[in-house]
Image 1 (tube, helix red, strand yellow):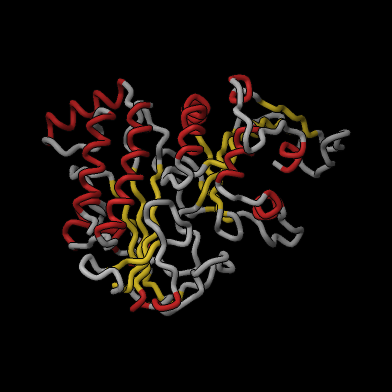
Image 2 (cartoon, rainbow, N blue to C red):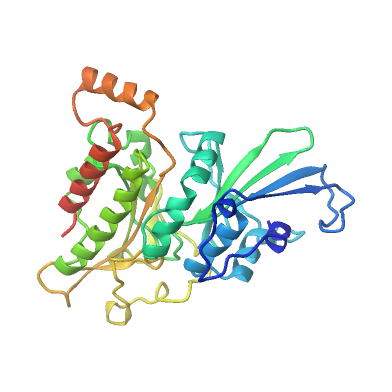
Length: 362
C-alpha cells in the first residue's frame, strides 16, 4: 500500500478527473530481493494492484484522512507484532474477512470479485456524490487493492471507515434494513449480550428510538434520502443502517456474556469528544452529516435536554445489485412467507428503508 501510494498519480482538490483516471490501475511486482521501487521482504514473490489510486487519494482528502496517519495505521506493523491489523473473529455471511487497524479507525475487508468490479463500476457516481455530499452516511472508501502471491489466488480488499471507531462502549448495536421477514437476532446471538447485533424486529419490540429532536431529525433524514437516491439510481439494494448506542448511565462497561466486565479502551480517543463524560461538555454533533465521533441524543420537546445516549451511525453493505438471483429470491420469499422480505427492487427498497428510519427517529 505504501509503495503504491508513493508511485501513483495525483488529482488535486480542484481537478475534475477524466474517464481514464477512474479506470487506472497500477501494477507492482514484489520479488523477495526487492527492486528499484520495492523493498526486499522475507515472503514469497507477489503482485500488487492499486485501483484508481488518484481517485481514492482525492476521496481521502475529502474525508480529511491524513496520509501519514493512514499509512501508520495500516502499514506500520513492528517486528514484535505491535500495530498489526486485528482480524474479526467470524467472517461475514459473504465469506469476507474483516481486519481492523490497530487504532480501530479503519476496516480492511476482503471482497469477492463481483463486489470489487461493482465498486469500480460505480466509482464515478460515488465520487461525484461524495464531492457534493461530504457528510454522506455511505461507506467511506479509502482504497481498493488486489494482492496475488506467486502461486496463489487473487485477494481483493477495500479499506474503509469503521462506524464504531470510538473508545466509548457500544451498549446496543442494530443492523436495520426496514424489512420484517427474518429480521430478528437469534437466541445464540442475543446470548452475546451487548456484542449482539440486533435487527429490525428486535428494535421495534424494544421500543428504542433515535432521539434527535425535530430539526436534527429532518437534517439526518435529508442526508439519508440523498444517499439512498444515489443507491437507487445505481440499482443497488440490500444495504443496512448500522447503529451503535452508547448509554451514559452504563459508563464504559458492557456485557458480552453472563457476567459484566469492562471493555478495555481499544485506542486513544480521536480528536474531539469521545473522552469526555459530562453532557454539558460534550459536542452535540450535527446528524445532518456523518460524524465519526457520534451525535448526542436530545429530547424531541427540549433541545437543551440530553437523554444520555450517543449514536454512531452509518450505511453499510452497498455493493449488492438487484440481480436476477435477487429477483427470484424476492418472488420465492414473498410467495412462501408473505410481504416483508429484505430483497426488493431498488426504488421500493430505498422508499421502505427511508420510511422505516423516519418512523424510528424522534
